[in-house]
Every structure is written in structure tokens, then in C-alpha cells.
Amino acid sequence: MYRQNSVQTPSFSDYPELARVWEASVRATHDFLPESYICLLRELLLSQYLDAVMLICCKDARQRITGFAGVAAGRVEMLFIDPALRGQGLGKRLLRYAIDELNADQLDVNEQNPQALGFYLRQGFEVVGRSETDGMGQPYPLLHLRLIQTKSVQTS
Image (cartoon, rainbow, N blue to C red; front, top):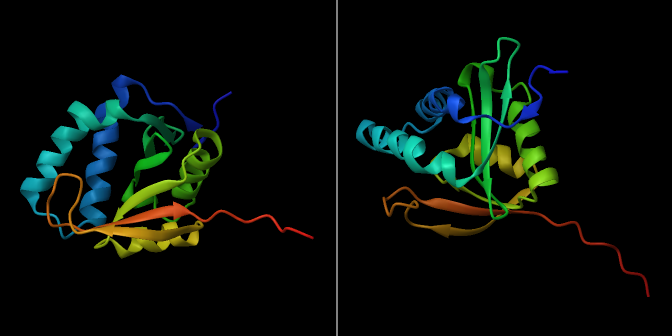
């Protein structure tokens, strides 16, 4: 039985809806990106990026996508929430699924997106590095994060 906002796998037919959520989220949180770059990234999202990751999403009672994440090789490559629904636990639910079920323990976040950085730090990640440019070589610095591993207590 379907539960509202349970984590599920989107289908190819969901790609336009994923792109809608992506664009709304980026416009709400990435005010440092120029319009031309957002348009380029949207095209790359649809033509390459979505196919390169294991996608998970949440849907509302009307089956509209409320948020989604993409994971590849132990990394959360994308996590976007419909801006109208932020603060309702969707990001936590998707991130927890990515960590627990897809073994993701690393991610990058734009340094100029302090809300996202704060979210990931609150979820147990730590900054372990920095790049001056984004994945396409543009001047949007990335912070590299890793999930903090709890060390088991050793007794002697």
C-alpha cells in the first residue's frame, strides 16, 4: 500500500516532474547562479545527470514529487526538495534512506548555499575538503562532506 511521502523509485516518465522540483529548489537556494547557468544545468539534468544516479523520491497524496535524491558510488550527488515543502522532514527522510539503504556517506555542497551546508552538518556530516570550482569548472566553490563515523569504544 502506498504511503504519502514514502521513499520510492521514480520512473523515466517522472523526469519532467523531477526537473520541476530541481529548478524550483535551485531558484530558491542558489541565488548566486546566473540564469544561463541554471538553464544549462537543467538540460544536463534531463539529458545526463538523472540517468547517472540511483534516484529516490517522495510523492504527495496526488502523486506529485515533493523531493528527490540521486546516489552514485557512495555519494549523494543531488538532493532537492520542493521549496514550498521545505522544513517538513522530506530532506531528512531522503538523506537517511540514501545513507542507510544506498550506503552513501559523502557529498558535495555549494559553499554559497549556507542553508544546505547547515542541513548536512546537522545530519552528521563534516567538511573534509574544498574545491574552488564546481564539477564543470565554474567559479562556484564546493565543500566536500563526509558522514562522521562513530568510533567504537575500545577497552583494554
